[in-house]
Each structure stands twice: as C-alpha cells, then as structure tokens.
Image (cartoon, rainbow, N blue to C red):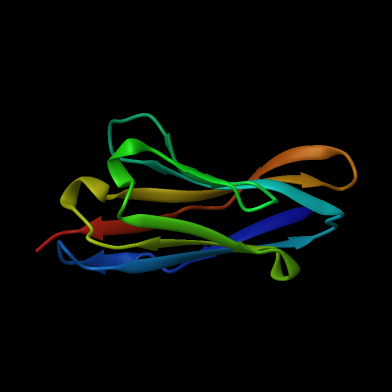
Length: 118
C-alpha cells in the first residue's frame, strides 16, 4: 500500500504565504508525475500544478507567478509554495502521485484546508 500525507494548510490573510508538503510512503518502486489539485465548495476539483519526475512543471493560469511546485525525489515528497494568496485560493488542496509498485496507480492524499481571509 502507498500513503500520501499532506501538511501545511491553515488560515492566512490575503497576500500571505503558505507551503504545503506531501510525503509518499509505502511499497514504492518509483514515482512519476506529482501534482496538487484543489476543490472549493460547490466547485469541481481542478489541477493547480504538476511536476514530472524530471522536474518539468505546469500551472493553472490563475496561480502562475504566485505558486511554485517542487519535489525532492529521494524523499518522495512534493511541495507547493503559495505566495500572494487571494480569497479565491480558498479550497481543500489534495496531493496526487502516479506510483509504480511496480504496477502504476494513482494515489491521493486526504486533503488539507487552505483558507485565505482577513
């Protein structure tokens, strides 16, 4: 089994910063893409940012220039640095990883709440 454990969410004022972390553990042979999704109340889950095993990144337009995704492959960990946060960034953020065990499966974290409010 593989587990993804997220941390770093919380309440922050507009313009503030937060850093999310997600560590994968268990019977892992290798990890492919890692990503962060978010889901706001009443909205569909959306992809926020993705990083390949080689470090190539892509972002949803609404966070470009404000969020940075990165990963530490030896630690099986992915991060999301969020700066200049806006109220519309409020959502539950989920970590996602493509993991080979050796069969490839998609795994999700339990979610961490990010609330941007004054």
